[in-house]
Length: 266
Length: 340
Image (cartoon, rainbow over all chains, first blue to last red; front, top):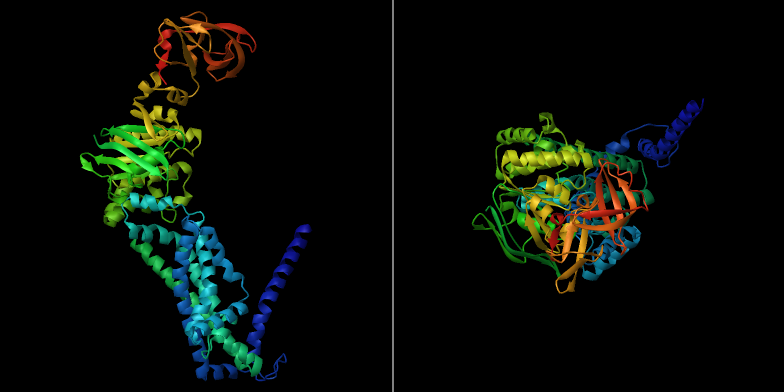
């Protein structure tokens, strides 16, 4: 008896959680198939016109391309800086390390709009005009600490004696890094890169201040929702989500393929 | 001589971890360096492996000076205390690492790895297993095979058995000794356990405060410890102090008994040499504690001066009850004399 009750409760709980998480997402999908500015559900007319309009529009292509290039460079720089940072953060013990650790995570706790404003003011101060390039810089200030933390986690439980063992067995410095340190860090670098991409792709508060005339996807969605809403907005949102999902999946597949090749070679 | 250490030193800040150590190691020897933690034995072996640069002195492999040769260029391999296995690789990949670094082709590597698995008594199917799936003893064997794979002239062991339970440790000690006999390689082994050193080694070097204070075969060290530190390191032994009373008269402070011709300032008497009944040097001692050790009984004995001596008697010693006083003695030939 008790078993059946707990089973039913558990099912209810799971459904409630899933509904809570996914109904908002489904509503975007539904809203994108309307032909009116005002959402009255169910729609009188179901249509894919908004998608046709979105795909035909140059703006759709442009905002995605801006978001993609920002995210692309953020991933590259965040992974490089995050890996080096993690090495300093977790691998070696040096004077001032704990201060460095605290200063490093501080930007994460800053409200992003405040950080965005601060960045815009500093860009003005040094005479840089905001564009998609300065948005990369802004994203990095917030994302590098997160990526550093993610990669650092790999160092806890990592036995640095492995590097000495590799050297003792004939590996030179570069071989030690390639054969021991990087493979051990690899899962962290992978998830760090993934987080960097998704956090950059979806970032609104930093981009809004620092991207200037270049409009990335989230900024476009926000401004069009606020001032000139039409079903075009949810349809672009759906397209943007699909594109980021495709990018993430293909990234994962490429990584898996590389690993498979390496294993076959070994 | 395969390895010669000439006044080797290593200082960290103001601490002398290794202090002017000179030692020669003949080819094929099983040498064990024994010392308590902080005695500098780990630093010493790291200097020998090339993982630390010496602050002074020189190191020679056969006749060649290798003081400044980095670890990856030395024909030596080390088995680390943590084993330092590559956790993201399989057993086979771990073993093949050194060969891969040398550029040995995959097929030859695999064949050699199979031989090495056999050498360390691991089944061939372990080749593709992940090292994280291996038990403690299996990981030891993988580490051993990995070290052998580089075909080293000398193998270093930095307390690899210290984290292993008693029974497995005993098995691996014997296996290691057999492996040494079968391969004929030079082994330099580090441990804090003199007992472990006695079981395996051809020769033992005892380290204290960065210096080697005695070297010798296990029998030599057992029979004639160089000083009280070495004697006490061997476990429970009685150390008696000689007091010179002038005009050729001397006595043991602890038991108040005269000694005709003392051979040194201190005398070591093993618990089994201190027996009931009359002998060369005897004293009335009171039993304060008795411990059953299986085949023998250990009794703690208090002398008139309050010093505690230890005796081990075969069997159960039923008459040595706590609080009872008996006559104990030892023979002068059972004394090992020490100056310091």
